[in-house]
Amino acid sequence: MHGVTVIDHPLVQHKLTIMRKKDTSTASFRRLLREISTLLCYEVTRELELTEEEIETPLSKMNAPVLAGKKLVFASILRAGNGLLEGMLELVPSARVAHVGLYRDHDTLEAIEYYFKAPEDISDRLVIVVDPMLATANSAIAAIQKLKERGSHNLRFLCLLAAPEGLKAFREAHPDVPVFTAAVDSHLNELGYIVPGLGDAGDRMYGTK
Ligand code: URA
Figure 1 (cartoon, rainbow, N blue to C red):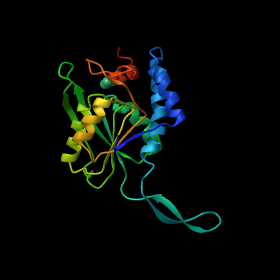
Figure 2 (cartoon, rainbow, N blue to C red):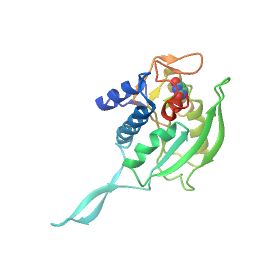
Figure 3 (tube, rainbow, N blue to C red):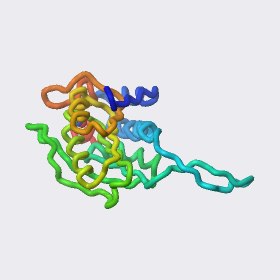
Figure 4 (cartoon, rainbow, N blue to C red):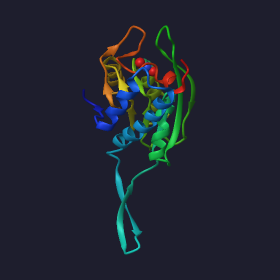
């Protein structure tokens, strides 16, 4: 699908398979999510622009590449987004962080906002929105809408698993926002879970079920 990148790196795929297994413990799930998030972050930042800076090595001066532009913003959709955030911040420690609190109404599957906090100046920064599961896409669509209302116009969305239904809805709502995912699964079930999926990402990482 146009605008969707599947990150098929072997390490990502291997770790994702272990995360999917129903007997994988909370501790292992959390560790794997942290590991996989650094690999996903590496891919989603692959096209970042570089500029040159004059530095001195112990031997000579040189013009060396450094990231251009303002610091990135990682926007985490609470609560499961925080599982991706940690590993990403390890790789890009200077990134700014936004939090968007949305929960799914279990009956309507609509996204309800209960929290929003973002850096003031997000309009001239690349904002990478993270949430492990792109299921109905209601939360992702709402979070990105809110970030756009705050002036953001350079956005990417990063998840671990996507459902075809969610991808379609997301691309229709925000065709300007590229999506990065480790896999696109078969379908959504009647409860809004991704099949085969990995269950409820938040519950699996925090041991709440
Ligand atoms: N959110 C999850 O955590 N899992 C799903 O399968 C769908 C949405």
